Amino acid sequence: MDVSEIATENHQTAAVPNDRPTKNVAVLGATGSIGTATVDVLENLHRLDPQFGWRLWAVSGHRNVDCLLDIFNRASAGDWGPRRVVFSDAEAAAECNARERFSTSQQHHEHANTCQLLFGDEALVDVARSPEVDVLVAAIVGRAGLESTIAAIESGKRVGLANKETLVVAGDLVRKKLANSDAKILPVDSEHSAIFQCIANTNAEPKKLILTASGGPFRSATKEQMHEATPKDALAHPTWQMGPKISIDSATMMNKALEIIEARWLFDVPAERIDVAVHPQSIIHSMVEFDDGSVLSQMSPPDMRMPIQYALTYPRRLPCPAPELDLSQPMDLTLLPADLDRFPALKLGFEVAACGGTAGAVVNAANEVAVQLFLDEKIRFTQIVPTCQKVLENHTFESSPTLSRLLELDRWAREEACRCADMDG
Ligand SMILES: NC(=O)c1ccc[n+]([C@@H]2O[C@H](COP(=O)([O-])OP(=O)(O)OC[C@H]3O[C@@H](n4cnc5c(N)ncnc54)[C@H](OP(=O)(O)O)[C@@H]3O)[C@@H](O)[C@H]2O)c1
Image (cartoon, rainbow, N blue to C red; front, side, top):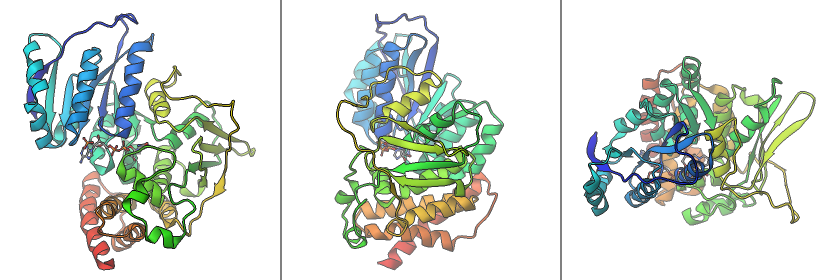
Protein backbone atom coordinates (compact mmCIF):
# COMPACT_ATOMS: atom_id res chain seq x y z
CA MET A 1 0.00 0.00 0.00
CA ASP A 2 1.27 3.47 -0.80
CA VAL A 3 1.68 5.57 2.35
CA SER A 4 3.29 8.64 0.88
CA GLU A 5 5.73 9.94 -1.62
CA ILE A 6 9.02 11.28 -0.44
CA ALA A 7 11.33 13.35 -2.60
CA THR A 8 15.04 12.64 -2.54
CA GLU A 9 17.68 15.10 -3.60
CA ASN A 10 19.66 14.37 -6.71
CA HIS A 11 23.34 14.59 -5.83
CA GLN A 12 25.94 13.87 -8.49
CA THR A 13 28.97 11.69 -7.68
CA ALA A 14 32.23 12.65 -9.37
CA ALA A 15 34.32 9.47 -8.90
CA VAL A 16 32.93 7.38 -11.78
CA PRO A 17 31.15 8.20 -15.04
CA ASN A 18 27.39 8.41 -14.53
CA ASP A 19 26.46 6.95 -17.92
CA ARG A 20 27.03 3.33 -16.84
CA PRO A 21 24.07 0.96 -17.29
CA THR A 22 22.21 0.75 -13.99
CA LYS A 23 21.77 -2.33 -11.84
CA ASN A 24 18.81 -1.77 -9.56
CA VAL A 25 18.92 -3.83 -6.37
CA ALA A 26 16.07 -4.45 -3.94
CA VAL A 27 17.28 -5.40 -0.46
CA LEU A 28 14.45 -7.00 1.51
CA GLY A 29 15.42 -7.24 5.17
CA ALA A 30 17.75 -4.25 4.76
CA THR A 31 17.76 -3.48 8.49
CA GLY A 32 19.23 -6.86 9.49
CA SER A 33 22.75 -8.17 9.69
CA ILE A 34 22.81 -9.33 6.03
CA GLY A 35 20.78 -6.32 4.88
CA THR A 36 23.13 -3.71 6.34
CA ALA A 37 26.16 -5.61 5.03
CA THR A 38 24.51 -5.57 1.57
CA VAL A 39 24.02 -1.81 1.80
CA ASP A 40 27.78 -1.44 2.52
CA VAL A 41 28.58 -3.58 -0.51
CA LEU A 42 26.26 -1.55 -2.75
CA GLU A 43 27.69 1.76 -1.61
CA ASN A 44 31.13 0.46 -2.52
CA LEU A 45 29.99 -0.89 -5.90
CA HIS A 46 28.19 2.36 -6.69
CA ARG A 47 31.46 4.22 -6.20
CA LEU A 48 33.94 1.76 -7.69
CA ASP A 49 32.39 -0.49 -10.33
CA PRO A 50 33.48 0.86 -13.72
CA GLN A 51 30.90 -1.27 -15.56
CA PHE A 52 27.56 -0.73 -13.78
CA GLY A 53 25.94 2.09 -11.83
CA TRP A 54 24.63 0.16 -8.83
CA ARG A 55 21.53 1.57 -7.18
CA LEU A 56 19.74 0.56 -4.01
CA TRP A 57 16.33 0.74 -5.70
CA ALA A 58 14.24 -0.61 -2.81
CA VAL A 59 14.74 -1.43 0.85
CA SER A 60 12.50 -3.13 3.37
CA GLY A 61 12.45 -3.41 7.12
CA HIS A 62 9.96 -4.79 9.60
CA ARG A 63 10.12 -2.64 12.76
CA ASN A 64 13.50 -0.94 12.84
CA VAL A 65 12.52 2.57 11.69
CA ASP A 66 15.79 4.22 12.79
CA CYS A 67 17.93 1.85 10.76
CA LEU A 68 15.80 2.10 7.62
CA LEU A 69 15.81 5.90 7.85
CA ASP A 70 19.60 5.87 8.22
CA ILE A 71 19.91 3.73 5.08
CA PHE A 72 17.42 5.97 3.27
CA ASN A 73 19.35 9.12 4.18
CA ARG A 74 22.75 7.60 3.39
CA ALA A 75 21.71 6.33 -0.04
CA SER A 76 19.71 9.47 -0.90
CA ALA A 77 22.64 11.72 0.01
CA GLY A 78 24.92 9.77 -2.35
CA ASP A 79 22.25 9.54 -5.08
CA TRP A 80 22.33 5.74 -5.15
CA GLY A 81 18.76 5.21 -3.96
CA PRO A 82 16.19 4.37 -2.88
CA ARG A 83 12.94 4.69 -4.86
CA ARG A 84 10.89 2.40 -2.58
CA VAL A 85 10.97 2.08 1.20
CA VAL A 86 8.80 -0.76 2.52
CA PHE A 87 7.81 -1.67 6.05
CA SER A 88 6.12 -5.03 6.44
CA ASP A 89 4.80 -3.74 9.77
CA ALA A 90 2.06 -1.10 9.38
CA GLU A 91 2.82 0.72 12.67
CA ALA A 92 6.46 1.10 11.72
CA ALA A 93 5.40 2.52 8.35
CA ALA A 94 3.12 5.04 10.09
CA GLU A 95 5.92 6.03 12.49
CA CYS A 96 8.30 6.43 9.57
CA ASN A 97 5.78 8.57 7.71
CA ALA A 98 5.33 10.80 10.75
CA ARG A 99 9.05 11.42 11.29
CA GLU A 100 10.29 14.91 10.76
CA ARG A 101 13.03 13.90 8.35
CA PHE A 102 10.44 12.65 5.92
CA SER A 103 8.22 15.72 6.09
CA THR A 104 11.35 17.85 5.65
CA SER A 105 12.38 15.94 2.55
CA GLN A 106 8.89 16.42 1.12
CA GLN A 107 9.92 20.04 0.53
CA HIS A 108 11.89 18.60 -2.41
CA HIS A 109 8.82 17.01 -3.91
CA GLU A 110 9.25 18.85 -7.15
CA HIS A 111 12.39 16.79 -7.93
CA ALA A 112 11.93 13.90 -10.33
CA ASN A 113 13.59 11.36 -8.03
CA THR A 114 10.75 10.54 -5.68
CA CYS A 115 10.71 7.68 -3.19
CA GLN A 116 7.53 5.89 -2.23
CA LEU A 117 6.90 4.62 1.28
CA LEU A 118 4.87 1.39 1.21
CA PHE A 119 3.72 -1.10 3.80
CA GLY A 120 2.52 -4.67 4.15
CA ASP A 121 3.55 -8.10 2.90
CA GLU A 122 1.91 -7.44 -0.48
CA ALA A 123 4.19 -4.46 -0.97
CA LEU A 124 7.20 -6.77 -0.51
CA VAL A 125 5.86 -9.01 -3.28
CA ASP A 126 5.12 -5.99 -5.51
CA VAL A 127 8.68 -4.72 -5.09
CA ALA A 128 10.07 -8.21 -5.78
CA ARG A 129 8.08 -8.31 -9.04
CA SER A 130 8.85 -4.73 -10.01
CA PRO A 131 10.20 -4.48 -13.59
CA GLU A 132 12.73 -1.88 -12.40
CA VAL A 133 14.44 -4.42 -10.11
CA ASP A 134 17.37 -6.35 -11.62
CA VAL A 135 18.57 -8.10 -8.47
CA LEU A 136 16.74 -9.01 -5.29
CA VAL A 137 18.70 -9.68 -2.11
CA ALA A 138 16.47 -11.91 0.02
CA ALA A 139 17.63 -11.03 3.54
CA ILE A 140 14.38 -11.28 5.51
CA VAL A 141 14.69 -13.78 8.34
CA GLY A 142 12.50 -16.89 8.46
CA ARG A 143 9.48 -18.03 6.51
CA ALA A 144 8.40 -14.36 6.21
CA GLY A 145 10.85 -14.11 3.32
CA LEU A 146 9.23 -16.87 1.26
CA GLU A 147 6.59 -15.10 -0.86
CA SER A 148 8.77 -12.18 -1.95
CA THR A 149 11.62 -14.53 -2.87
CA ILE A 150 9.29 -16.71 -4.91
CA ALA A 151 7.83 -13.60 -6.58
CA ALA A 152 11.33 -12.52 -7.64
CA ILE A 153 12.03 -16.00 -9.04
CA GLU A 154 8.72 -15.99 -10.96
CA SER A 155 9.67 -12.58 -12.39
CA GLY A 156 13.01 -13.86 -13.67
CA LYS A 157 15.26 -11.84 -11.35
CA ARG A 158 18.71 -12.63 -10.11
CA VAL A 159 18.17 -13.52 -6.45
CA GLY A 160 20.97 -13.21 -3.89
CA LEU A 161 19.58 -15.74 -1.44
CA ALA A 162 20.36 -15.27 2.24
CA ASN A 163 16.90 -16.42 3.33
CA LYS A 164 17.72 -20.14 3.51
CA GLU A 165 14.23 -20.80 4.90
CA THR A 166 12.81 -20.35 1.37
CA LEU A 167 14.57 -23.51 0.19
CA VAL A 168 13.98 -25.33 3.48
CA VAL A 169 10.23 -24.74 3.25
CA ALA A 170 9.68 -25.03 -0.50
CA GLY A 171 12.91 -26.31 -2.10
CA ASP A 172 11.23 -28.63 -4.59
CA LEU A 173 8.73 -25.98 -5.71
CA VAL A 174 11.47 -23.38 -6.05
CA ARG A 175 13.51 -25.74 -8.24
CA LYS A 176 10.49 -26.22 -10.52
CA LYS A 177 9.90 -22.47 -10.70
CA LEU A 178 13.57 -21.88 -11.54
CA ALA A 179 13.31 -24.39 -14.39
CA ASN A 180 10.43 -22.34 -15.88
CA SER A 181 11.96 -18.87 -15.60
CA ASP A 182 15.09 -16.89 -16.40
CA ALA A 183 15.70 -16.40 -12.69
CA LYS A 184 18.95 -17.43 -11.10
CA ILE A 185 19.66 -17.98 -7.42
CA LEU A 186 23.11 -16.90 -6.29
CA PRO A 187 23.77 -18.14 -2.76
CA VAL A 188 24.64 -15.61 -0.07
CA ASP A 189 25.06 -18.13 2.75
CA SER A 190 28.86 -18.33 2.97
CA GLU A 191 28.86 -22.15 2.89
CA HIS A 192 26.74 -22.35 -0.25
CA SER A 193 28.63 -19.50 -1.88
CA ALA A 194 31.84 -21.47 -1.22
CA ILE A 195 30.39 -24.62 -2.81
CA PHE A 196 29.07 -22.58 -5.73
CA GLN A 197 32.55 -21.10 -6.23
CA CYS A 198 34.18 -24.55 -6.07
CA ILE A 199 31.90 -26.03 -8.73
CA ALA A 200 31.30 -22.93 -10.90
CA ASN A 201 34.02 -23.71 -13.45
CA THR A 202 33.84 -27.47 -13.70
CA ASN A 203 31.59 -29.95 -15.46
CA ALA A 204 32.65 -32.69 -13.01
CA GLU A 205 29.85 -33.97 -10.80
CA PRO A 206 30.73 -33.40 -7.11
CA LYS A 207 31.03 -36.63 -5.12
CA LYS A 208 30.36 -34.89 -1.83
CA LEU A 209 29.48 -31.42 -0.58
CA ILE A 210 31.16 -30.77 2.78
CA LEU A 211 29.54 -27.93 4.73
CA THR A 212 31.77 -26.44 7.38
CA ALA A 213 30.32 -25.35 10.73
CA SER A 214 31.97 -23.14 13.31
CA GLY A 215 30.35 -25.26 16.02
CA GLY A 216 28.83 -22.13 17.56
CA PRO A 217 29.18 -21.06 21.20
CA PHE A 218 28.59 -24.61 22.55
CA ARG A 219 31.08 -26.45 20.33
CA SER A 220 32.88 -27.88 23.37
CA ALA A 221 29.98 -27.74 25.85
CA THR A 222 28.56 -30.82 27.57
CA LYS A 223 24.87 -31.70 27.27
CA GLU A 224 24.47 -30.61 30.92
CA GLN A 225 26.00 -27.19 30.18
CA MET A 226 23.70 -26.77 27.17
CA HIS A 227 20.72 -27.67 29.37
CA GLU A 228 21.54 -24.68 31.61
CA ALA A 229 22.31 -22.26 28.74
CA THR A 230 20.66 -18.82 28.80
CA PRO A 231 19.73 -16.80 25.69
CA LYS A 232 22.74 -14.56 26.41
CA ASP A 233 25.10 -17.59 26.37
CA ALA A 234 23.52 -18.93 23.18
CA LEU A 235 23.63 -15.56 21.37
CA ALA A 236 27.40 -15.15 21.96
CA HIS A 237 28.65 -16.55 18.65
CA PRO A 238 32.46 -16.86 18.57
CA THR A 239 33.10 -15.88 14.92
CA TRP A 240 30.02 -14.34 13.23
CA GLN A 241 27.92 -11.24 13.99
CA MET A 242 24.37 -12.26 13.07
CA GLY A 243 20.71 -11.68 13.87
CA PRO A 244 19.23 -13.42 16.95
CA LYS A 245 17.36 -16.21 15.15
CA ILE A 246 20.32 -17.50 13.14
CA SER A 247 22.59 -17.06 16.20
CA ILE A 248 20.40 -19.44 18.21
CA ASP A 249 20.22 -21.75 15.17
CA SER A 250 24.04 -21.79 15.15
CA ALA A 251 24.13 -22.70 18.84
CA THR A 252 21.78 -25.69 18.37
CA MET A 253 23.39 -26.41 14.98
CA MET A 254 19.91 -26.20 13.49
CA ASN A 255 21.51 -23.60 11.22
CA LYS A 256 23.69 -26.36 9.75
CA ALA A 257 20.62 -28.60 9.51
CA LEU A 258 18.82 -25.87 7.52
CA GLU A 259 21.94 -25.51 5.36
CA ILE A 260 22.02 -29.26 4.65
CA ILE A 261 18.43 -28.95 3.37
CA GLU A 262 19.28 -25.74 1.48
CA ALA A 263 22.26 -27.47 -0.20
CA ARG A 264 20.11 -30.45 -1.13
CA TRP A 265 17.78 -28.22 -3.18
CA LEU A 266 20.20 -25.54 -4.33
CA PHE A 267 22.69 -28.01 -5.84
CA ASP A 268 20.23 -30.87 -6.47
CA VAL A 269 22.39 -33.29 -4.50
CA PRO A 270 20.86 -36.07 -2.39
CA ALA A 271 21.28 -35.93 1.40
CA GLU A 272 23.69 -38.87 1.50
CA ARG A 273 26.19 -36.88 -0.58
CA ILE A 274 26.25 -34.01 1.90
CA ASP A 275 28.55 -34.00 4.93
CA VAL A 276 29.39 -31.60 7.77
CA ALA A 277 32.82 -30.83 9.25
CA VAL A 278 33.40 -28.56 12.23
CA HIS A 279 35.85 -25.74 11.52
CA PRO A 280 36.02 -23.32 14.47
CA GLN A 281 37.95 -20.55 12.67
CA SER A 282 35.23 -20.00 10.00
CA ILE A 283 37.83 -19.38 7.27
CA ILE A 284 37.21 -22.47 5.13
CA HIS A 285 33.61 -21.76 4.16
CA SER A 286 32.91 -25.22 2.73
CA MET A 287 34.45 -27.86 0.50
CA VAL A 288 33.64 -30.06 -2.47
CA GLU A 289 35.08 -33.53 -2.96
CA PHE A 290 35.35 -35.00 -6.47
CA ASP A 291 35.58 -38.61 -7.68
CA ASP A 292 39.39 -38.51 -7.93
CA GLY A 293 39.64 -37.67 -4.19
CA SER A 294 40.50 -34.01 -4.81
CA VAL A 295 38.86 -31.60 -2.32
CA LEU A 296 38.42 -27.94 -3.26
CA SER A 297 37.62 -25.27 -0.69
CA GLN A 298 36.97 -21.53 -0.67
CA MET A 299 38.59 -19.45 2.07
CA SER A 300 38.24 -15.88 3.29
CA PRO A 301 37.92 -14.18 6.70
CA PRO A 302 34.45 -14.52 8.26
CA ASP A 303 32.74 -11.47 6.75
CA MET A 304 29.44 -11.77 4.85
CA ARG A 305 30.22 -8.88 2.53
CA MET A 306 32.36 -11.20 0.38
CA PRO A 307 29.64 -13.76 -0.51
CA ILE A 308 27.05 -10.96 -0.75
CA GLN A 309 29.14 -9.05 -3.29
CA TYR A 310 29.88 -12.20 -5.30
CA ALA A 311 26.14 -12.94 -5.52
CA LEU A 312 25.66 -9.43 -6.97
CA THR A 313 28.61 -9.28 -9.36
CA TYR A 314 29.00 -12.97 -10.39
CA PRO A 315 30.89 -13.95 -12.54
CA ARG A 316 32.94 -10.80 -12.03
CA ARG A 317 35.20 -10.34 -9.00
CA LEU A 318 35.74 -6.79 -7.79
CA PRO A 319 37.54 -5.30 -4.75
CA CYS A 320 35.34 -5.79 -1.70
CA PRO A 321 35.09 -3.90 1.62
CA ALA A 322 35.61 -7.19 3.55
CA PRO A 323 39.07 -7.82 5.09
CA GLU A 324 41.63 -10.07 3.37
CA LEU A 325 43.36 -13.12 4.84
CA ASP A 326 46.43 -12.05 6.83
CA LEU A 327 49.07 -14.61 5.95
CA SER A 328 51.83 -12.70 7.77
CA GLN A 329 50.66 -14.35 11.02
CA PRO A 330 50.49 -18.08 11.83
CA MET A 331 46.98 -19.39 11.23
CA ASP A 332 45.28 -22.55 12.48
CA LEU A 333 42.79 -24.26 10.19
CA THR A 334 41.18 -26.99 12.29
CA LEU A 335 38.76 -29.57 10.91
CA LEU A 336 36.86 -31.81 13.34
CA PRO A 337 34.14 -34.42 12.87
CA ALA A 338 30.60 -33.25 13.68
CA ASP A 339 29.08 -34.65 16.90
CA LEU A 340 25.57 -35.84 16.02
CA ASP A 341 24.98 -37.03 19.58
CA ARG A 342 25.45 -33.63 21.27
CA PHE A 343 23.88 -31.84 18.29
CA PRO A 344 20.81 -33.89 17.30
CA ALA A 345 19.70 -31.06 14.98
CA LEU A 346 22.21 -32.40 12.45
CA LYS A 347 20.51 -35.79 12.35
CA LEU A 348 17.21 -34.03 11.86
CA GLY A 349 18.67 -31.97 9.01
CA PHE A 350 19.86 -35.06 7.15
CA GLU A 351 16.49 -36.77 7.72
CA VAL A 352 14.50 -33.79 6.43
CA ALA A 353 16.80 -33.34 3.42
CA ALA A 354 16.26 -37.01 2.54
CA CYS A 355 12.44 -36.81 2.98
CA GLY A 356 11.71 -33.59 1.06
CA GLY A 357 7.96 -32.95 0.65
CA THR A 358 6.34 -31.29 3.66
CA ALA A 359 9.10 -32.13 6.17
CA GLY A 360 11.12 -28.93 5.68
CA ALA A 361 8.14 -26.57 6.09
CA VAL A 362 7.07 -28.28 9.30
CA VAL A 363 10.51 -28.39 10.93
CA ASN A 364 11.26 -24.82 9.89
CA ALA A 365 8.04 -23.48 11.44
CA ALA A 366 8.54 -25.50 14.64
CA ASN A 367 12.10 -24.23 14.90
CA GLU A 368 11.08 -20.57 14.45
CA VAL A 369 8.55 -20.94 17.26
CA ALA A 370 10.90 -22.90 19.56
CA VAL A 371 13.72 -20.37 19.07
CA GLN A 372 11.39 -17.52 20.02
CA LEU A 373 10.12 -19.46 23.07
CA PHE A 374 13.73 -19.96 24.16
CA LEU A 375 14.59 -16.27 23.60
CA ASP A 376 11.52 -15.40 25.69
CA GLU A 377 12.84 -17.79 28.38
CA LYS A 378 9.77 -20.01 28.16
CA ILE A 379 11.63 -23.21 27.25
CA ARG A 380 15.15 -24.46 27.79
CA PHE A 381 17.82 -24.43 25.09
CA THR A 382 17.79 -28.24 25.01
CA GLN A 383 14.04 -28.29 24.27
CA ILE A 384 14.38 -26.52 20.92
CA VAL A 385 15.40 -29.51 18.79
CA PRO A 386 13.16 -32.10 20.52
CA THR A 387 10.20 -29.75 19.90
CA CYS A 388 11.03 -29.75 16.18
CA GLN A 389 11.39 -33.55 16.19
CA LYS A 390 7.99 -34.00 17.83
CA VAL A 391 6.22 -31.68 15.41
CA LEU A 392 7.82 -33.54 12.49
CA GLU A 393 6.67 -36.89 13.93
CA ASN A 394 3.12 -35.57 14.53
CA HIS A 395 2.58 -34.35 10.99
CA THR A 396 1.17 -36.37 8.11
CA PHE A 397 3.84 -36.40 5.42
CA GLU A 398 3.00 -35.41 1.84
CA SER A 399 5.57 -35.81 -0.92
CA SER A 400 4.40 -33.16 -3.46
CA PRO A 401 2.65 -30.33 -1.62
CA THR A 402 1.46 -27.13 -3.29
CA LEU A 403 2.60 -23.76 -1.98
CA SER A 404 -0.76 -23.12 -0.29
CA ARG A 405 -0.56 -26.54 1.41
CA LEU A 406 2.94 -25.71 2.66
CA LEU A 407 1.69 -22.41 4.06
CA GLU A 408 -1.22 -24.21 5.73
CA LEU A 409 1.19 -26.70 7.32
CA ASP A 410 3.45 -23.85 8.39
CA ARG A 411 0.54 -22.42 10.41
CA TRP A 412 -0.34 -25.85 11.83
CA ALA A 413 3.29 -26.56 12.82
CA ARG A 414 3.53 -23.24 14.70
CA GLU A 415 0.53 -24.16 16.86
CA GLU A 416 1.77 -27.72 17.28
CA ALA A 417 5.20 -26.47 18.35
CA CYS A 418 3.62 -24.36 21.12
CA ARG A 419 1.64 -27.39 22.24
CA CYS A 420 4.64 -29.76 22.21
CA ALA A 421 6.92 -27.25 23.90
CA ASP A 422 4.28 -26.58 26.61
CA MET A 423 3.86 -30.30 27.21
CA ASP A 424 7.55 -30.54 28.00
CA GLY A 425 7.14 -27.78 30.56
N1 LIG B 1 23.60 -12.96 9.52
C1 LIG B 1 24.34 -13.79 8.81
O1 LIG B 1 25.57 -13.78 8.88
C2 LIG B 1 23.68 -14.78 7.86
C3 LIG B 1 24.48 -15.65 7.12
C4 LIG B 1 23.89 -16.50 6.22
C5 LIG B 1 22.51 -16.51 6.05
N2 LIG B 1 21.75 -15.69 6.80
C6 LIG B 1 20.30 -15.71 6.62
O2 LIG B 1 19.88 -14.42 6.22
C7 LIG B 1 18.58 -14.14 6.72
C8 LIG B 1 18.66 -12.86 7.55
O3 LIG B 1 19.52 -13.09 8.66
P1 LIG B 1 20.04 -11.87 9.56
O4 LIG B 1 21.05 -12.45 10.47
O5 LIG B 1 20.41 -10.73 8.68
O6 LIG B 1 18.71 -11.55 10.40
P2 LIG B 1 18.36 -10.22 11.22
O7 LIG B 1 19.60 -9.46 11.51
O8 LIG B 1 17.52 -10.65 12.35
O9 LIG B 1 17.50 -9.37 10.16
C9 LIG B 1 16.25 -9.83 9.75
C10 LIG B 1 15.62 -8.87 8.77
O10 LIG B 1 14.29 -9.35 8.47
C11 LIG B 1 13.31 -8.33 8.84
N3 LIG B 1 12.13 -9.03 9.37
C12 LIG B 1 11.97 -9.62 10.57
N4 LIG B 1 10.73 -10.14 10.67
C13 LIG B 1 10.10 -9.86 9.51
C14 LIG B 1 8.77 -10.10 9.03
N5 LIG B 1 7.86 -10.77 9.74
N6 LIG B 1 8.45 -9.67 7.78
C15 LIG B 1 9.37 -9.01 7.03
N7 LIG B 1 10.63 -8.72 7.45
C16 LIG B 1 10.98 -9.16 8.67
C17 LIG B 1 14.01 -7.50 9.89
O11 LIG B 1 13.40 -6.22 10.00
P3 LIG B 1 13.54 -5.25 11.31
O12 LIG B 1 14.98 -5.39 11.76
O13 LIG B 1 13.23 -3.90 10.77
O14 LIG B 1 12.56 -5.69 12.33
C18 LIG B 1 15.43 -7.47 9.33
O15 LIG B 1 15.50 -6.56 8.27
C19 LIG B 1 18.17 -15.38 7.54
O16 LIG B 1 17.41 -16.21 6.74
C20 LIG B 1 19.50 -16.04 7.88
O17 LIG B 1 19.38 -17.43 8.06
C21 LIG B 1 22.29 -14.81 7.69
